[in-house]
Amino acid sequence: MSLSVAAREEFLAEAHIASLAVEAGEGRAPLTVPVWYDYVPGGDVRFLTDGESVKAKLIAKAGRFSLLVQRGSPTYRYVSVEGPIVLSSPSTLEDLTRISARYLPPEAVTGYVHGSDLHALVTFRMRPERWLAADLGALA
Image (cartoon, rainbow, N blue to C red; front, top):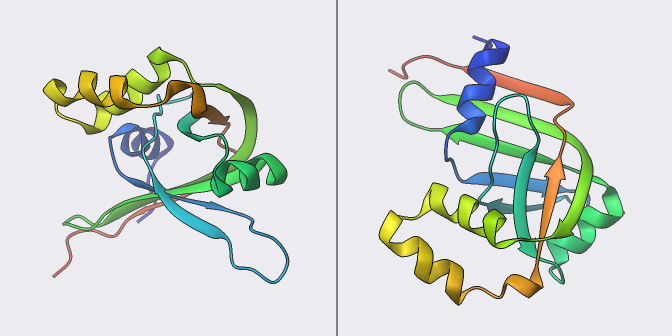
């Protein structure tokens, strides 16, 4: 069963670990890696990574990527979104704190943020263009 626009955006806005896929070049399958991300319904998908990583270089070259989030327990649900990079910029303390706080217990965020090399990080923003989403109901 497909999801409404509101339901798919609400699901993407939850704190799932996402699988990010980006074109890896001729003769190669797409690079697919897990990422933490941030999304507010109607907005852009944001995530940050080391600016010198293979992932960052491939995204900069391709100019777009796709993201898949899923829930494996009943009801099985997934949302896949793909689109262009609309901004790539040095990560800010606010970016790092906001995304970290979605995934870490509150007492761990400050230590994680202060232990990160903020100067090495870049934040990518992707504008969702294409969506695939479904809720397959309770798995029996």
